[in-house]
Amino acid sequence: MNKVRCRIRSQRRHVKYVDKVRTDSPVLSGHSKQIYGAQRVLTSIPPRTTPCFPTPRTFATSAQLQKKGAKAAREAAPPSSSTTADDPSDLSALEADIASSIERLKTDLSKLRAGGRFNPETLENLRVAPQKSSTATVKLSDVAQVIPKGRTVQIMVGEKDHVKPTSSAIQASSLSLTPQPDPTGANPLLLVINIPPPTAESRKEVVAEAAKAGEKAGTSIRDARGKQQKKLRAMQVSKSARPDDLKKAGTAMEKVVEKGTAEVKRIVDSARKVLESG
Image (tube, rainbow, N blue to C red; front, side, top):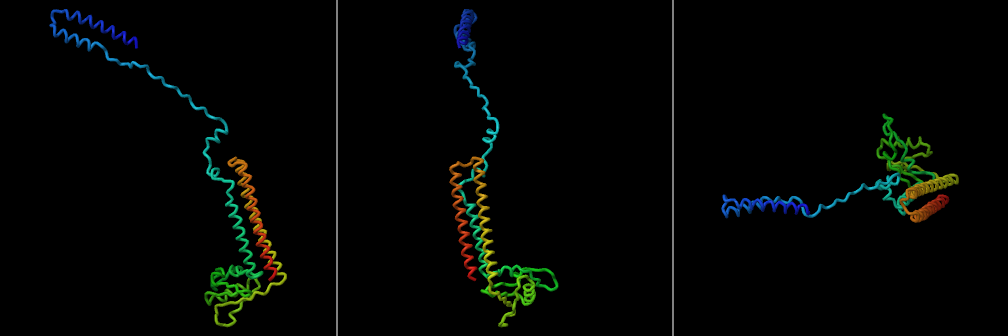
């Protein structure tokens, strides 16, 4: 700044000296001397090209320090949707599996109750060859309707040509059943099958089948528990849930499993009493 001021002062002194010499010249008039002197002063001072205030300083930034090792990789990786969506207290999948197992058990036991050792679905699944000229077979349920009525089963055939093939398929099966035409003779499309009353041996077999159905349901519940336990274990290893939450979830899981197991036992015991009574 001081250097610039000294430079301007030096130039002004030089201009005054030159103007004084030229104004003393007899060639210039008084008015021309004044104009020339003013123009000389204005044109001799160079314009200021540098600012009077100092140039602001710029701050240098260093590169951010990076973490090394597996910890940095774990922190840099985006959280997976399964980790963020996992909730140890969510037992909806376990409850759904147990409910499905109980429903299957009820269905299996209802089939046993319907006719003792006889299950109407065994008739519906028999294969029938409706065309004599062809070896193609269809399910009996596709050509006839099975209607259980106590110890009697009625089979309503859809077409007259399918009555004989349906009767032959039932007789050729391993069910030891013999279909009879309509006793009244009013409906030629009707076949009647008399189911023999259950014996002591047949009752034992039915009760054993009920017990097997209960064991199957219990195995399904244990499998569902194992699946939920594996899920909680994965959360513990990945540390995606707090230990207290995992402990509470484990206690709640055991309560749900115990409730489902007790329900299976109650259903099987009730069915066993009905089957044993005949």
